[in-house]
Length: 362
Ligand SMILES: Nc1ncnc2c1ncn2[C@@H]1O[C@H](COP(=O)(O)OP(=O)(O)OP(=O)(O)O)[C@@H](O)[C@H]1O
Ligand SMILES: [Mg+2]
Image 1 (cartoon, rainbow, N blue to C red):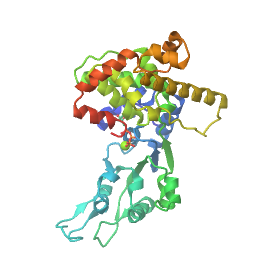
Image 2: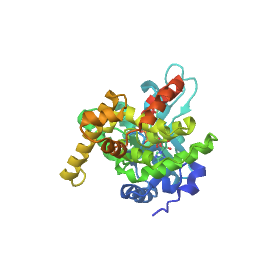
Image 3: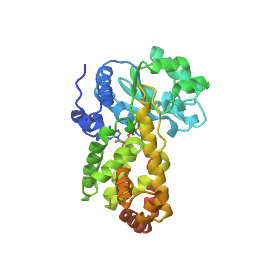
Image 4: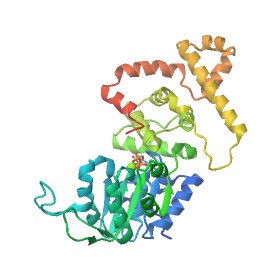
């Protein structure tokens, strides 16, 4: 088994977070680490699945960096970024005169990845004819440049990634089942950030330190209240969303940016999923739903009373002290935070506003 030392690889792979940050402490990430160590050494195709922003790109680079072909090329193809008509020539290359405008011949990325790793990101974007060509490559290592008379042979390790459910795509008839079996010899599933909440604090601290250094800022470590909010949030955009949020905090220098941002993304907070992978505790889930509902009601009443907590407590029929406790427990921003948010809002540039709303999709 390959020994994992991400730090030693960082230079050859471009900047990577340290080993303990990438894998954290959760059991689910330790399982990823162990699987990665085993598959990197074997020349088999790997399919990396997981929601957007979970680190699939990082894992693909690690597979290459830990493989015996690490001295060879690492060629990434971002399938959705290349228009359908160009993708075939980008991937497989072409011969002179293959089509109008083909004044010379050109190797494709498959060829450029010879004796290295070909990373096909968002593989579900390949159309059916390209899927057939890829299948041939995986079956016998052969492919044909556009306009060529003969097949070429190449030795390449293929790593694919997707945030889609390929089995559903097969059902829908848009993805070839035989290709799926070929690319999915080993599957690495990247867990969503909400499945590894115990790692959130360390990830946040890492990004804070990183962006403080990068932007030459001195943003302070996050308070325990803010960390509690981060631990509770649903994180639809996963680590990328957390990273962008901390980046905004470092630049704007105010912790309320975080709490007010997450409250604004409230719908995502309640979008809890029911995982059928393991046992389900009905009691625990019911308790969680009640807490979430309570939080939603409190938020609504507070907003209705323009964050006047005394009036809100009266409306809710609880004591002022009980409401303060519940606000803190639910990770809602304090009254002061909201006031500052209003001021902040006036100061925010258009640019900043767009980066905030695009944080999850960035
Ligand atoms: N385990 C991790 N530790 C530290 N940073 C991470 C980790 N995983 C992801 N990141 C950071 O989060 C961002 C998103 O990661 P990455 O691009 O690898 O995700 P992805 O799964 O490929 O997303 P997409 O499906 O949108 O392509 C990057 O800036 C990356 O550096
Ligand atoms: Mg990616």
